[in-house]
Image (cartoon, rainbow, N blue to C red; front, side, top):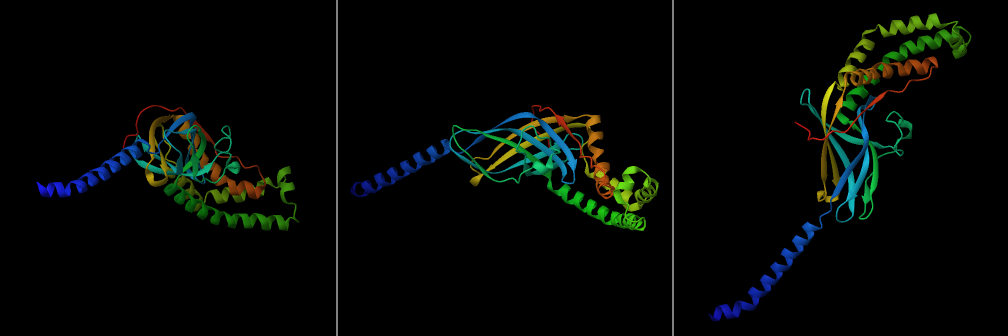
Length: 276
């Protein structure tokens, strides 16, 4: 009994300290930084030299206190083959109405702060990093092979006395250049480049699960939200047609033609989680 009386003040002190920390942790958990996503518009899907692309627009709103958003990530799951692919942000689109194909107006992505009582609009382009590296390698090899035909065209122009693009535009030398280009397109390197690009464009007809993850400082306010979207047969065909557009770019540049941009498709948001 005497021992209990002697230790009483210490026990009360320990209980007081424990009570303080319990209160502090509870308060911290209630005030944990979180953010919500409110999507707008539609899901934009593309395929170009950056690989498979997804563009999303909407608004971010913090729930409790300010949130420092370090990055936003996207996970894609195909209903067709159950394949899961990771997308990373590649750019901001400064204008909500700017199409995915308007890459010249893109801005580099960067972390940003969202404060209580305010919202933050986002319009972000994501790409499949792994597929991008593969597409990059395919195009680099293709461009290397094109340089030989480009050299032959340049030499032909020099022999013609530098008539250059004016003669091409008028059509009086079109046949000669067409023969060189047709010969190039029959080469194994050109055929392989098209086949490989077509395989990397995995946008097939069907349904896709999409999970958006907001990564915050320290991870205390990380937030995820899932959607679904569907691509039709025409959508898939249009996106795969970009393989031809991409391979035509160096040819168009050499011939002085206007380069056609890669096409994109839009799909409405659908409810439901991504299925792995």
